[in-house]
Amino acid sequence: MASDVMSVRLWLPRIRVREVVADAPERLVVRVVLSVRCPGCPGCGTPSGRCHDRREREIRDLEVSGRPVVLVWSQRRMVCDGCGRRFMEAHWAFEGSVTARLARRLVNDARSMPVNTVARRHGVSWGLVNALVAAWAGLVGEVLAMVPHRSQAALSAFLASQGHKWCRGVKVVVSDGSKPYKAAIDARLGHARHVLDRYRVIRWFQAALVAVRRDVQRRPEGSVPAFDRDVFGSRFLLMRRPDKLSEAEQARLGELFAARPRLTAAWDALAELHGLYLADDHKGAMAALDRFADIYSTGLIPEFSDTVDTFLAWHNQILGWHHAARPSNGRIDRTNNLLQVLRRTAHGFTNYANFEARGILLT
Image (cartoon, rainbow, N blue to C red; front, side, top):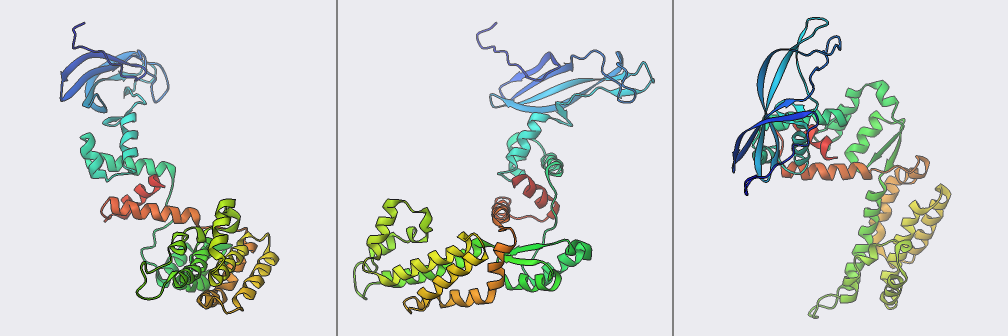
């Protein structure tokens, strides 16, 4: 063997290399044939060894050492000895004009980059990559619907399109606190239990603590720095639930609260609001709500007035969480975030079918 020659296995079972057609730095072309002598007839299943003719097909494969690889398949057209049917021999590793492993690579790359970029990177057409993405998406999932606007009319139209029987089958609805969505849900799914997503509710509650913390950390005008470093440095720690704190973190908060009663009251109030969801049942949630009311009644935390108003407006949907098997929109929110990243990566979509296919593969 020459000093600059190296043999490389194709790792394709039942495929035999007949010859190397081109071996250049920019391209590798290999002619291959199937090693199966008598492929089965797709009609009757009879093994057939009589070849009518051959046709050559170019099939792209994964790169080798950075070089594009083309397999020239000398494909036989067989004649069945049983039924006389003529058929082309097939191999599971070949999917149209690419190998199955290259098809998987193309689809996998399309999860994190635009189809145009994938096509240029592998030297194939945009149509091929997009067709593979759509085909694979059809195998792993289905999109129920894509509602283009966050409005009452848009959601109502979607629910109406599903039909009365479908709507009657909905038992629990979890939303993010959107008033237009609430109006549509009340109109079309009034029989279902409407629950607010816990994550959204906790974000509402945390906003009040943030307002108190910002007021407490503010120092007199002209001071340098203009804020209390200790309070500002604890802004993320203050968002933690009490049951998630280590002993060191609890000690740090104890020092922080020593001379700051308003901050202490705000943190205790948020802890009781967390208790709405940490409670075992509705009765425990109401007990936590009573303890929150006692803290709020001291007048130390007027910033929580908006929280109280919000709770009064949505109390049925918040407290209903314990009566609906504690549902969550966490997975849906994750999916929505990934879809927004996908839209930015692709610089937007003009075809909803392509967006659906990419979205299914991504999530």
